[in-house]
Length: 290
View 1: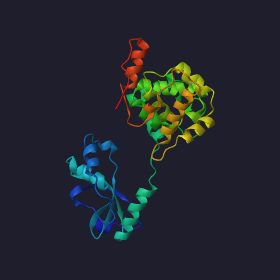
View 2 (view 1 turned 180 degrees about the vertical axis):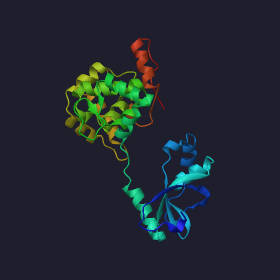
View 3 (view 1 turned 120 degrees about the vertical axis):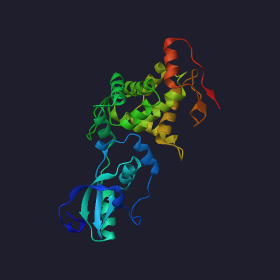
View 4 (view 1 turned 60 degrees about the vertical axis):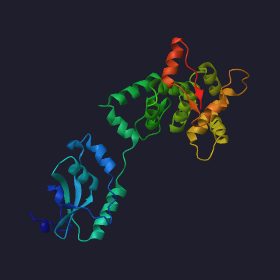
């Protein structure tokens, strides 16, 4: 079928089109991100390549949605790409279609992505198993999580990237202290507790921390965190400070030094290294300050 035989309103058609024939209109297209192209090209896979949305206007092919996929195909040496062909009469119609494609596209939630990864990704499987050992289930649906469950998969993976033991201890402390209340297993609480444990990995005592936190409620911790809110600092940081304040309350000895909470002031061994050494009873190098 010739290009001009496609009429507005007709059903779209999928064809393989030469990438050199597809034009890009800078009047409405976003700038080309070659960093994305180069990084994606390292693991190019046709199974992950969606067809371009291509307009047929004035006898030419125009990439309405898929500029980066076109550039990716060219970068890896492919000569043709799959395209969904649609008829647009004017540049304005193309620009409107480009807007609608990008505004109406629903971004997949982190929980939904993680659920799929459990079928093939060893890292995701290990994270799930660590959570279960800590008494926490990953709640990978949109419904409100029950007790001992969390939907904060982004926070969980963020902490895991800093240490598997750190993740397990973070979740275990929160669960033991607040009976698995899902309000204490969200992003801010998980991230904040991991900050606290990292900064005091060589000296904090679980036998002090858990009983102290158990005497609090999520609401009372939130109030304490609010008093430590500083412009430019995250809510996670405020919660980490709250955990420190609660830990040190009414302690005359074994108090934790507040200066370690200052951003970029604490430098020490990785949490997993420190805790593994403490559990073996071989002593650990003290964290230092710069």
